[in-house]
Image (tube, rainbow, N blue to C red):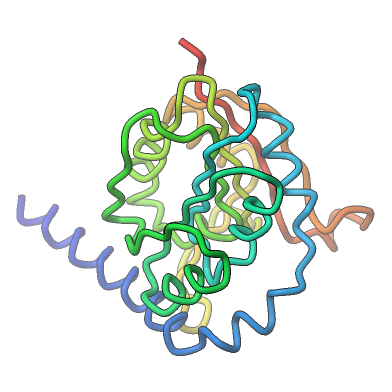
Length: 213
């Protein structure tokens, strides 16, 4: 029990330090990312969902709300989650959507509620020791047949601090093992940005489905 408490405290410290970085740089982050084209990722998620629109989408780690606004403009119901208080405030103002302030170690989601979970550049901040629990919470929050999209900086299964932010950098086979262990079925994966040699594609994007029954 003592070891578990120590690990929990360490994970909390990692999470809070990373969130503090985003809190202190929220305006700069918004200005630097507002024009990023992630239409390929949004399309990959929506294309994989078999349910009838409008869809209920959870934007996990929604940041200042760029993609929440896009989902809403496409006619869907989008709900955001971010652990950074300033991001949550900015996302509500920018998108007009409901945004829950929750960090990834303390997710509290309604069961079987979402048609899709969109985790764009967010799950890589989860330390590997906490990943199974986070993925299981997302699995439980999806409706049967629901879809999880993730995009993370790829690597060789290393993790640690990159300046003031913590990251875990997986290759596809390892990422697949984590997702299938949580109950997900693989749909597709690809590397970004599109149209470049693999060594110039630092992002691993992947789509996963919760079994329909």
